[in-house]
Amino acid sequence: VADYKDGKWSDFKILPFGKIEVSPACAALHYGQAVFEGMKAYKNEQNEVLLFRPLDNAKRLNISAKRLCMPEIPEDIFMEGLTQLIKLDSEWVPKTEGSSLYIRPYMFASEQLLGVRPADEYKFIIFTAPVNSYYAEPVNVKIETSYSRATEGGVGYAKAAGNYAAALYPAKLGQDAGYQQLIWTDSVNHEYIEESGTMNVMFHIGDKLITPNLDFKTTLAGITRNSVLTLAKDLGITVEERRVSVTEVINAAKEGVLKDVFGTGTAATIAQVASITFKDDKYVLPKIEERELSNKLAKMLQEIKHEKIEDKYSWIHK
Ligand code: PMP
Image 1: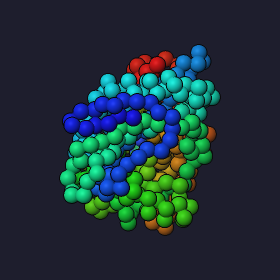
Image 2: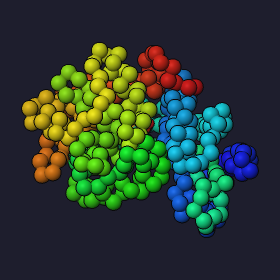
Image 3: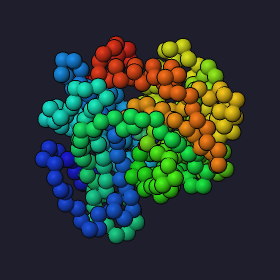
Image 4: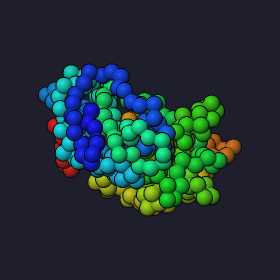
């Protein structure tokens, strides 16, 4: 835990997991100044604890904080807090492949405040929880065309708490109808694909791996997304980051060239999609055994995370 007051971070401490006290007038609870990150710790054969691209999480937290008018947390403080905590929690990092220790760094406006303005006081907290992989089974998804998660000029690219609040209701409607995940589309005409609830989304169409670009700042710049695109290029796959229309995806499904759809994210790594529904039509994707590319990428990423294969890009932080 660290506190921001009088323009600086101080009072760094590690506490047993427990309740924290905030004022009933805590600014974050009214005006939503709250940003967070999600990351994981893994182990290698030697039982050493490994983090995956942690500096990228620190950088992204600060991009989110800036958009929400919050102070940055210096990268060295982020890394120091993280490593000290993980050292203490190392026995909770499972060795089994696929399992990990989930790490949640977050920051919120803790000042007691009634008027609408950026707060002057903040808390930065990191806590951990052991988890299994998120979606072991392929998921059924629906392309959402009634509700929006993010708008151009909004906070969609930030990992801000409010984004998730806005997504809960449509996601619940989707879940009640049998879809584990929604695929969000742009808020103007619901014409272009953005991302999924907690994942970026990729389409293997013909010989290409295609994913929405980040130019419109409505989509989170996923660290797994970037890693998967890098690995795919290494495998000689043509990667395209550009606008992806719903029509393009549906036509590819109709023509039988939509080989795969999968989500990428820290929680699931790669979550393969079983079926994709658009309006009243459901398109079932090829059998999992036939998804050569995503199976290979998932395996490579998993093996890098557990240091079973070469970490060519120095993604691992011991
Ligand atoms: N989009 C959203 C909305 C997310 O919450 C996440 C999870 N952080 C992602 C994409 C994937 O990002 P990452 O690969 O960095 O976990």
